Image (cartoon, rainbow, N blue to C red):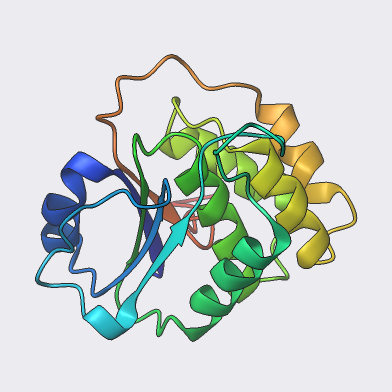
Length: 180
């Protein structure tokens, strides 16, 4: 089953090795330096310089824009899905969960937005997807408000210390019924 691994920056190497990731999407502040794990192919790594803010016009901070979301969508659609995709930001709580939702819908557009948001909440009680990324992703993927509404329905995540990576399956786990 294809999975998206969401991680804080401090644990990307560990998560890449543990889950066998070879592709990575980084959402970090413009100019923020970090070391790409050796198991991630340089040609399969995209860094988007964006801050974790939900509105434009905040001084030198870079708010998520349409071109950032288009790059997330393009990157996800080129992911081979044979191995998990690693997505990270500083704490793994806001930008990267939003990007994970966008990536999941970019590659599996027929899935239900509410079900996807519930799977995110089950995978991470801490995730609070960046509202601006979600809204732009909703528009870019022609979700007609469903993704934004689904994310609002799960509410804000619990307070986090930025040390809680998680895996988001692209599809719900199939349950087997034993007996009648």
